[in-house]
Each structure stands twice: as C-alpha cells, then as structure tokens.
View 1: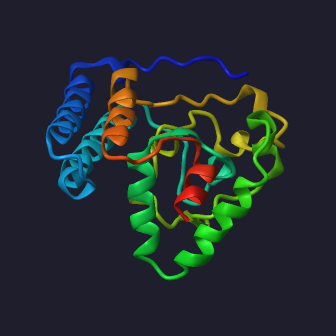
View 2: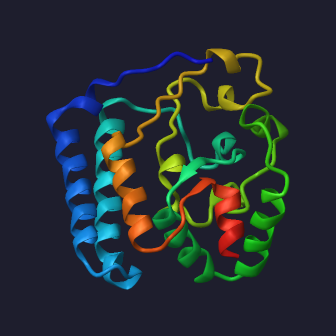
Amino acid sequence: MPPTITLDAAASPEAKRHLDAMLRALQDALRKPPRWEAARDDVERAFLAYEAYIAHVVSRHPMSCRETCTACCHDNPRGVSGVELRRLQESILSRPGAGSTMMRFAQLATQRGDPSTWRARGVPCPLLKDGRCSAYVARPVACRAFFALTPPEWCSPGHERHGERLNPHLEPPAVLVQALRVLSDRLGLANADDLHSGMARLG
C-alpha cells in the first residue's frame, strides 16, 4: 500500500473557503423542493466549488497527471452518490452512443469482483474514449479526487515501481460526502456501492 499523503494546501484557508462553498451549495439544494430539477443548479454550484478546491491544491502541489494517462480510468470507483450518478447519466445521454455506453456499464456490473484485483485486469471505464473521459465535467468525486505525484506510469499495476507510487486523494471531507448522500436520498436517487452497478441500475 502506498503511504498516506498530507498536502499543506489542502488544509489552507483558501481550500477551506472552497469546501465551505461546496457545503453551502449542497445545503441550499437540501432546502429546495425534493426534485432533481429544483436542486440541479445548486448541485452544479457545489461541484464547481469542489473543482476550485482541487485547482487550488494542485496549483501548489504540481501533480504528474497528464492528459491521456489513464491508469486510474481502469478502475471501478467505489461509493458513488445518487446525485453523481444522475449527473453522469444526463451527460452520457446528451452524447452520441449513449445506448452502447450504458450497455457496457451493465456488462461490467455483472463482472464486479475484489476491488484490489479489478484494476489489475486492465478493463477501461466505458467513458474512456481515445484516452480521454467522454463525460469529464460530470465525473464523480471518486474520479476527481485521484492524483499522482510520482510518474504516471507508476500508477499502472503492472509497473515494476507500482508499490512506490504516491497518489494523494483530494476527496472532500466526510461531511460533504455525507451531504451528497443525504441529498441523494431526499431526491430519491439511490446511492451505489460502485460506479458500474450504479450506472447499470440507471440503464
């Protein structure tokens, strides 16, 4: 297991300001009528705040992640809220090939297994197209939070230095993750243990 990494910028006042803005947006959504249409704008505001938090941290701790390095896209992200699944579904349905993408999620959901061995299988996410995420703006927290400080090729389970990789996880605090799950429950959007099964249920 790689070591747990603490990044100073993640605990800075500026980072806290962005995370507080995310929480306020989710709280605003919780005060709205329990309909996705009523909550959508606040949810988008929450994710914009989260992206600002990530941008702040990365600007002070440069990561080695590069466009088209996709080792983290050969995983099945765990703990995805219903709100995130709905955002992702809307993004997929707005693009050509939505049916085949949703069908692929359903196929992968029948193959789920031990999280520690899934990534080693090298099965790409159905959203990975030509080395890029086709639903990047709507990707869930579990995808957004993953970064690398060591060379990106080390992230591949087959690399000889995989055990030495440094992968900070810029996940929002537990209170924000819980707020997403509570909002999902309020909106009748079921949370999922993993991305594949969650998307398969929506398909």
